[in-house]
Length: 392
Image 1 (cartoon, helix red, strand yellow):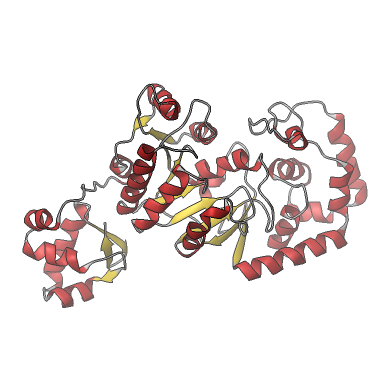
Image 2: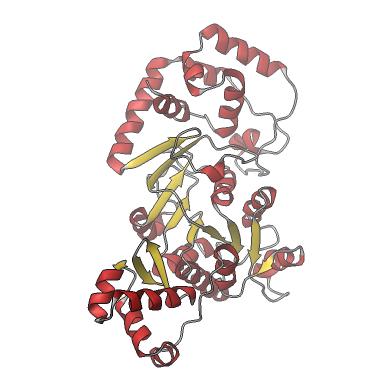
């Protein structure tokens, strides 16, 4: 097997998760060395590990499911059981798991990367709680990114601004990341997708398991323009503790975090706490002091988070570009002048080459280039790749 297959084998072992992988890697050095370790060495690790009484902290989340709490309550030691040992040593079991995973991955066009692989996101290397492996359908974020998170049971006010912020981030060529939860996450993704951005969902289930199921439409859409990302293997169902644990990936992949609505003890604040640890900028949408759905956001602003108005301020902060408010065609034509407006009207969300723009507008390349630069600096258009433009 090559390095990729060793990591795939390790990540597919039942009840194997990032904290256990971290502990094993510290002992054995690599996935390959874990695979090749003798029964004697694995048993020695098991005995040594279970002699140590020190606490190993992980996510601060107290699951209501008693079967899960031993893995996730802060201050509790991560358990290694004889079942874990037997799964590591049972190579026939491992071979079957690998075969099953590869079948699903082929069917779903799912890709796999791991820490050390050239495709592994650089932003995830320095997390306090490491991410070692990722499964994904589509692609991984590559540009400037912002996560949009907030209340599941959001208000119309929250819905409106999640859509607006998502769309304005898209206009600024900022990729959007969320957990695909109901409410704010979903509306933020819809706004960004509607605006033409790449959108990424980080799931608490396997990348092939759409959760919640009523988000199937956006789930399928962002496979084509963005990606579905998970550290959990194919077929894995979303357990309660998976969701706060995956939040570190949401914040890790994001250059900043935008909280649209959040109660005082909202799960979104777990993502914020990870982002603060990583030195990321936090933005929050203000609300009425009497509104329970705005308490978390208002407290974040009190504690130093930047205020969200419509998302354009986020674009300026992380890209240096200003995007203008949407105006009527008549007002836009008056502002730009006939020739620039004609060029702008030729563009859509499908990239158009400078040569095609020149030909359609019947204007020389040199003049087109000058007008395109002005339009781009004003935030009306975006150069998505060298010589190709879309509306901003």
